[in-house]
Amino acid sequence: MWLLVLLFFSLITTLFYYVVVKFNPSSLAKLALISWGATIMFTVDAVFAYLEGEEPVEFSWNALQLSSVLIAVVIAIWLLSLVLFSRKH
Amino acid sequence: MPVRFINVHPSQLKVYLVVEVACFITPLTVGLILAAIRKLWRGAERVRLDILVYLMLGGALVLAAEHVWHGEVVPWPPFLTAMQSPEDIPVVINEMTRVGGTMTLAVTGAWLLVLGFTRRVQVKITPIKQLTTTLSPTSTETGVK
Image 1: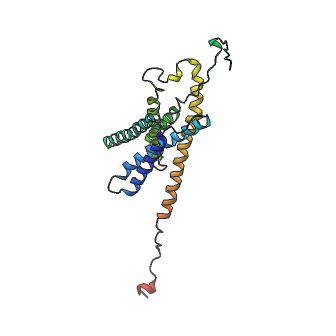
Image 2: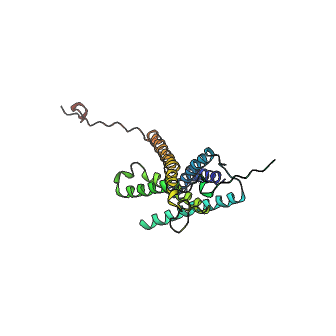
Image 3: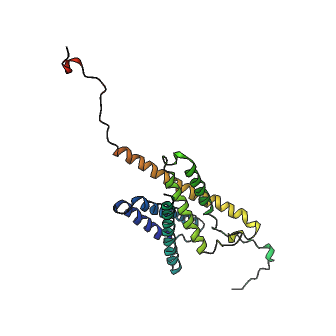
């Protein structure tokens, strides 16, 4: 489930990057890149899980909780990168 | 239906577990190496290495968070629950190369696609340069006889 949530989040951030001009586009690009990186890796993980006979996408309350935690982690990494970047310059 | 009991000593049992606990290590290591290269190499901006670093490190850290959630990564040595015994190390290394390597290759492929797309767009947008001449005006144009 978290794969689908991350994919949706990546699409939304990419759309924001192209549509919203008022916000600093380079910082939005970082958010989109982090979420796309995670989406690609979770896709590979799901493909391997499927090939090994596991369920690639799990729908449960636990999966929903993990999805929200992962989105929070993506945003935290993005904010951290923004803070580190602004400190350097 | 009669129930059959199989008498097997525990030492004879071999349990093969498909563990996916270390796949994030490969992209994380590659991402850290790329971040170091990006700082040291001046040509990194030309090939947009920053995009690859963000894809690789960001994705690997989120994947690590998922492993922490599932209790596969712990804050005490050896940090991976799959590495409790030395026998498990080959399994972990196999997974690092197989799943982690595929993840690294997939992210690198995505970066190459982005680079190719960006270059194609830039070629389309770049305006045609206006032709200029360096010839000096002739004597007839200037009116000098």
